[in-house]
Image (cartoon, rainbow, N blue to C red; front, side):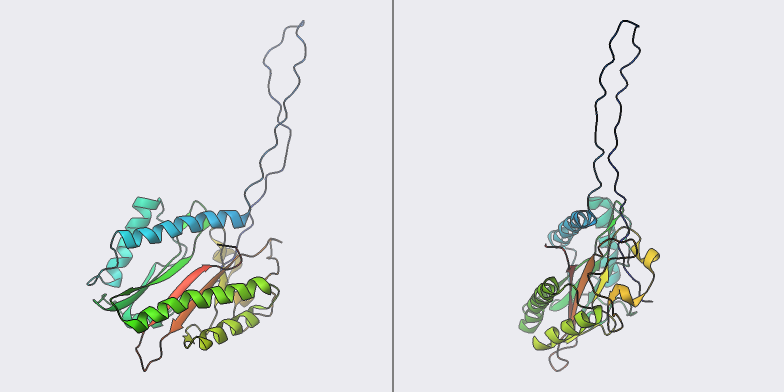
Length: 272
């Protein structure tokens, strides 16, 4: 899979205008009825719309757990079909801006663009789910890891995912003008300090927005937090609007302990 750039598309704002209210036919003796004035509401900010899409994604992941989709014996293909059905039946969308990605066991070491053989969940296993559903015309991007069984090292890695994410998010919010390359290096070092290798050598964050942002922006590395990105992360996009980021934390277990990884993905520059 080629590197896809995620970008936020410009959401046009409706300008205020005076809307006359037609008073109907008047007789010559009737007075002129004053016109009422209504202001057209501005469209919600992109950040607000993304937060709305994220809330639905959070509910979808809660449903993944409550409906028992991730059970031993299910293959990644089985899980993928159930995820599609869940999104359509319970959340009203059949549109996903990137492939639905359940990764099981040893497949959890692979980033989204790697092709892997289908695997089935075991009794004592690890699985991550990465989804990019589109609600209305707004993209969500959300990923979480789940551990089946009581393996302490798997649970430790899963807990580290959220901690690394929060540390990196706080660093970004304190230094939003850093370049994408600088942020990528910080994410890599923070992962290492927690005892894990960062899995994706290409990028750690990408843009998200109105569907389809990747078709509009292309695969310009300046729209990724990657080693080649020399652009400040808080630089405005080509539409002169704030760019909205998704941070991906993908950690690898020490091979001496086990061949698996974990994944955690959420909005970066919006408080959640």
